[in-house]
Length: 230
Image (cartoon, rainbow, N blue to C red; front, side, top):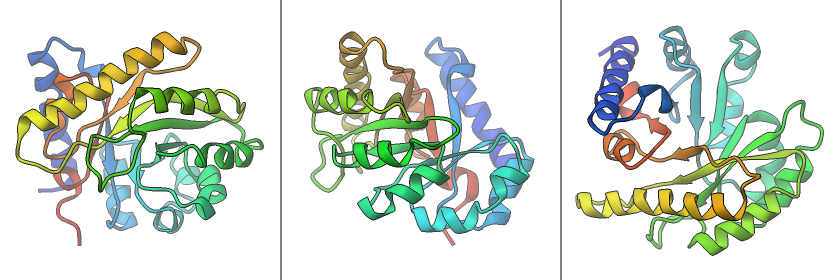
């Protein structure tokens, strides 16, 4: 299936999922996760109407998106993979948003590197869904401490929260992870009303419809859009 057709099919599925749970499809953004796919695939998705892309590795994104954001205005690039401390400066200059802020040490690194940006760097705080193998803050209290740090840097802008569901066939565990993120947002909104908590980034190719039912506002789609990794 071509990327154009895959994108159209995904948008139909997003719309259907929203209608089933009484949501407006305009509330849910579709991100194309282009990791391991080459630049022509990104350009094909852009030509099909996609503007939001996610990459897991700073170096790969640096190579793939060099000059693309200038050549194709409106392109938005998010980092969704683990960020190494020594890549913080590069990430702050390349990405529009870092979704994978999973520990406090990253916040001052990104904040200090973002001071000279023309626009603040978007930040999503990552909640661990309960798997020891995954990164992320362990609970709402830890997220609150992180939010307080982010709000102290004028070069950073809180945009919401992110999580990755556990790798399992148990739909109950997947849904529980998504509900935990939505509940954490309620806590943070009450504690930090000055923050922007509008983005709940959750849901991938295999579970995005469940994520939408639980309140996702941004779904991260790789395989269902670009096909299997090369």
